[in-house]
Image: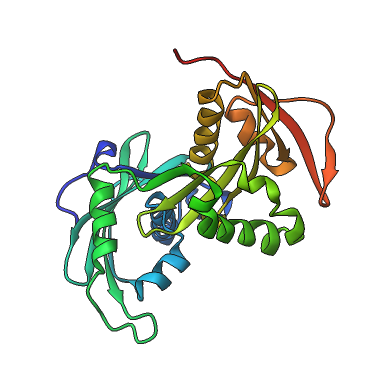
Length: 294
């Protein structure tokens, strides 16, 4: 059982959701078992906050994480259309155990508090095994406020192996774009950005080439599907925009896939001209004026 009432400020990680009609009961309040679902859904997002694509990260680590115990204390009820926040914090890492404190909050008020115990174990036998040192360091580092990713900016020779992994997964396997359109001779002259997590796994990539004198062009932007909606894409984009600014460009432009236009709008880019199709995908030209930071 929880021994105190956690506050929102206790949690670095927060997952937000809105109560759906299907989640309320005849009393017009959230049916009790759904709070367990809220916590479980938040846990999936917790691993993303650690910049870990869960399946590939656990495969690399050689194990998996299993729930052993969940205790909930109910303090008040959520209702249809409430906006809730689910906070999770790792309180303690044992040899194989991971003890979490959780809370479902409405306007910073705890409605439900939780005590969760997970066990790191062999994926096939589910027999407990020690939490790997890299995972332990990542989880402890997250709670200490450390950054979960690093962004490398450099030549194609510097990032080719890992950037190619992301391009292959996103462009070729997911989107069905021909390999001849994914790699070209411009890679050798471009400035590249690569974001990877603390396991060294590549998460996102992009490149910067010259479109015209004083104009940079960003392209080949790709992010691991499990980390979309996180900060990985913005890290890649910010690094390339800064590289364009550093070399004296007054503008940077790109050809955004239609599904990514909203992302680039939030990053300050503006659409220019009509949409067009390339590789069977709708695109929109977008541009950002650069100002000197001097």
